Image 1 (cartoon, rainbow, N blue to C red):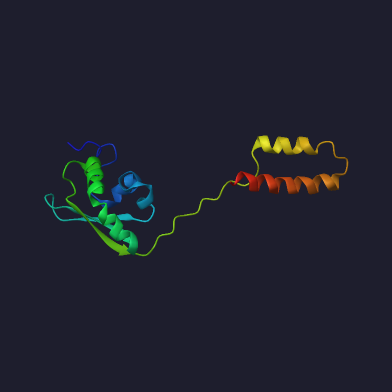
Image 2 (image 1 turned 120 degrees about the vertical axis):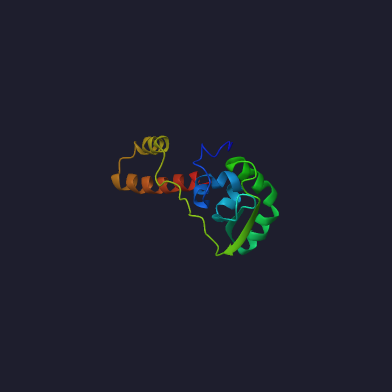
Length: 139
């Protein structure tokens, strides 16, 4: 039987592979490639993958392990080979760190400024302190 096909919702279409694509391709290739469709019958099924030009040849070089992972998810001999078609480069979405300070940093900053008498100086130093602490936490 198909060992992981039931768990992941089958695999009769390439679109069904989207949710397990990072497991099959790995983090590096899953960000810039995507499954397009299956072609052929049960005996000679081929998965067509879309990837940017330079990555296409590198993905083909890794076709052995990729086929093993595909068949582990979809069932033995489900996919006989892969074909990679070149596409435009897909830029992964940038993830921005959350803005603001952690509660501990916020408390330390306020405690350090609590003894200042001048509100204007306190606000200026607080603003500068937030900026410095936020820059320091990016590293």
